[in-house]
Length: 369
Image (cartoon, rainbow, N blue to C red; front, side, top):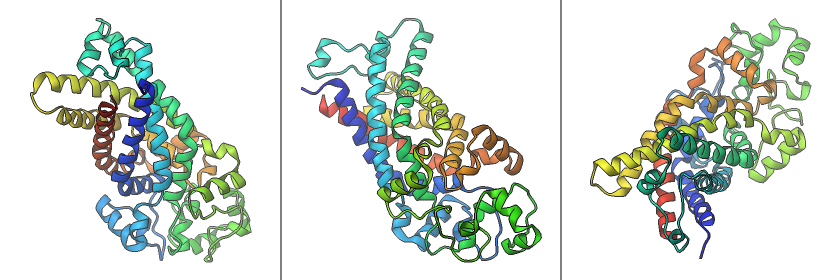
């Protein structure tokens, strides 16, 4: 007989696998929107340089890069989702048990588990303690999950945000020009080179001649952001050129992001219980509705942390090793709206992703029980 924690881990892994297949194209668009800095109009820039809407973005990626472009990074995405959700659900359910929210009886060890109604009824009569324990369980599980899987998400972000080999080199390196941190650049990158001393530009963005973003030819050399052929190649090159610390870039905002699950999962349990009490419909419908409402609510509140995490993990991240400096620069140079860049796309993917993930988890766990 499988242990309850092992059942939760298996069900969580299955949920992550199903979710990654469904939302991969939308995740590519969302990640590129977040990694893109202030819009720049550079002569000769590819249409992929500006993400002007989810459907148009998907269309352009498909035209320029084909189906592989829409599923760029799906390997590390699956590699990340499986352990991420396995760890999360196993730790979450175990934490609830230890904190007295989810008390598993001896009958459960024989193959059955309490449903949401029984969990809430067995909770402490003082409702605030129940919510506190639910939130603490969710945050602790989230922290364990993101700490273990952060290197995978760094690799996934690098693969998704790297430019397509056939794209215009000026567009590929437009983000480096943005790092000069002044607003009124000439739209032509070459005129920018003429107006400012080259030695100043090199020092300002910490590059050498082999990685000059203002050169028309494609830059090469270890100082440049390398092109990653696949997941293993990305792991190797990141470790070779940037060291082990690069794999934990963006961990701080990810840990702050555990507030997201601290909001989402207590709300999910609450909504599911409420729907079960109010409506006599199939349980799966209640799960989907509860998952959708809880995910959208949590995303709307905590979304800026995803933008910060993606910026820190992206290819030009070394110019922003401090989250505080990144927050300041986005506010000063790009405006508060950039904290919510790609949120529309994010909502389009949170609805199917959350529904597929949680429904898959519940169904697989019930099957294992």
